[in-house]
Length: 296
Image (spheres, helix red, strand yellow):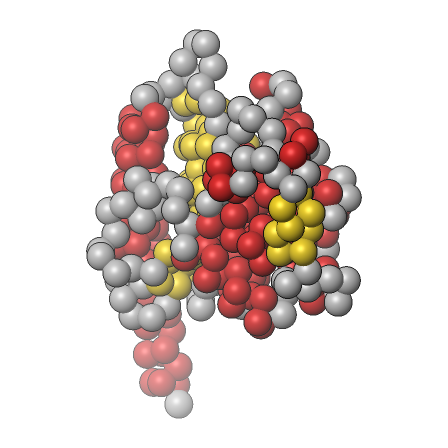
């Protein structure tokens, strides 16, 4: 018995040292990659099955931009779980709601409005295509943005703030900074979501599928991963100000590893001065580094 205990102790010490060495290596790699952004780069990664967590400025409050559409979708699907409405329930979209000057594939398909669209299609527009108008239509059924904040905090996600919808964020540059979270808390939320601890199993599977069908950010997390890698993710992007600073280029999601396990990852690039394509490349490179590290 003492021999078994000694062997187990030695194995655990060796395993811990190996994990620490891998995390140190990943930290050094991300530090080098982050320099190219000329801004704030914050990262968190969780091995969902083992809960092993890695952070690079993971406690840094970060501008979410459209990443906040993921928690909004959770809040909507929670209401559906409670029977307040269904995915097939239709909402009438007026011409006034089809505003110009904002990203909206839905408006491009129905420029004149006066159309009835189901919650299911609105969620597809909002999550898979990051549609801003669909987002604000759904937000109106939840109430104020702080309603989403209150809902998310119920799951122990403390470092999370929502004060504005899409239209509100676009009114003033600084408004976007009121919608923030830390990478660590975002990966915690992603883990809880994947484990089925937030919404029902059917709606968890539905939202996960929508996130795998994301069409935005193809130069970010998915870009450098092996062909066929399953990535369920949500992007967020801001404008660039007159001084050349981009407030946010983000990507968060769940990556399936070759061994069938999963990592939740959040990469936020905030207040950065490098060209947009470089900011996306930084995210792609960090995603690949995390993938290589956690698949070992």
